[in-house]
Length: 119
Image 1: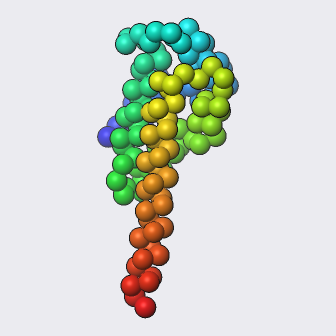
Image 2: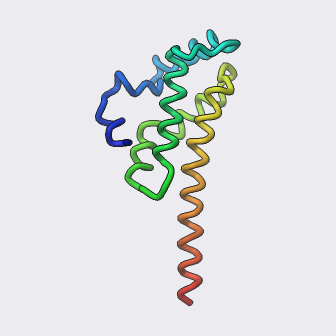
């Protein structure tokens, strides 16, 4: 699924990562602060981030790397710390980060346990 996402092109992957499109994301969040339209570009962005979070679940390192490249941590921090960020945007991003952090933590934990069991 992640490979398909990467292959579709930038016109479909609207993560609003660059400087100009980040301003667009801020405008979308300001305009839909009180009511989120199901067919809006902001809802599409939210759904895309949710899909990315679902793709990162599991132990596929290749998929995790690709997802990191699509939505880097610096961009995530810039969005969620902005005063105009709405909860509907924060939740899927939070899920995405938690999946990545928990998967990395469990890998470290598994490695440490394996070393302990071999003693």
